[in-house]
Image (cartoon, rainbow, N blue to C red; front, side, top):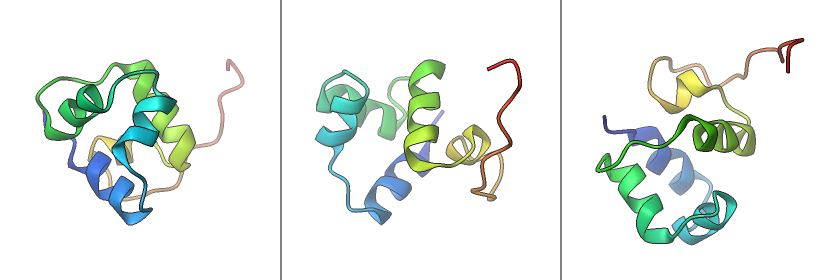
Length: 76
């Protein structure tokens, strides 16, 4: 599954891959594999990125074009 939004949203904000790799406690090479769709990104890392960008998970994985986050769950 290719997550094109990862690259698009990162480039829109002029953030280097290395910075996001550090945020996710991984290497730049591993993060590049996520962007290219070579390796699936774990859900916990997707959640970190959604919070970082202030967007929904659905937006990151191209299930919607709506960037807005959903209201936080009371279970969180």
